Length: 119
Image (cartoon, rainbow, N blue to C red; front, side, top):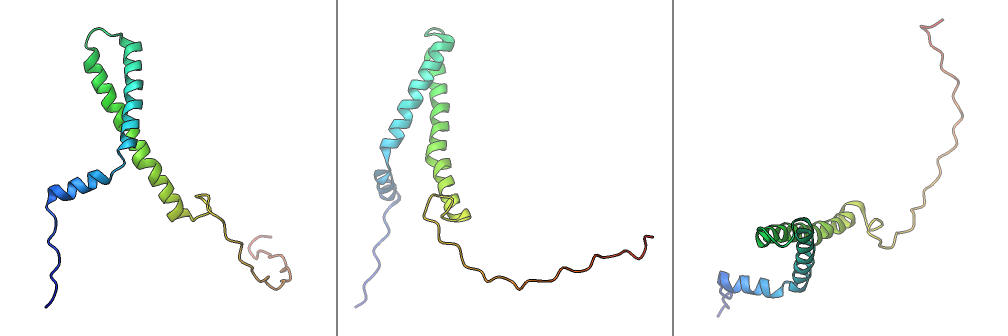
């Protein structure tokens, strides 16, 4: 009797597994940094009066998005690209020894060329 393949998990369980395996500590650190930066910026520029929480929410969202894109996407991509596109020497890995090349036989210098059209 042949074994059948296990049934695929429903979308909610697959999503729960992926989110459970994610490193939420990084996201929390980025959120805390962006909250501190945005609240200090809004407090310094506008004070705590007149739409403080609205401005704080917009500044927090913008700062969090910029920090998250930078540290969770751009910097890992640069590390991947340097390894895969430029080789391991660019990413700080051990460099292989240079390949030995055989020297070409010495050539005699040719005579200077003369133009037949110029006097």
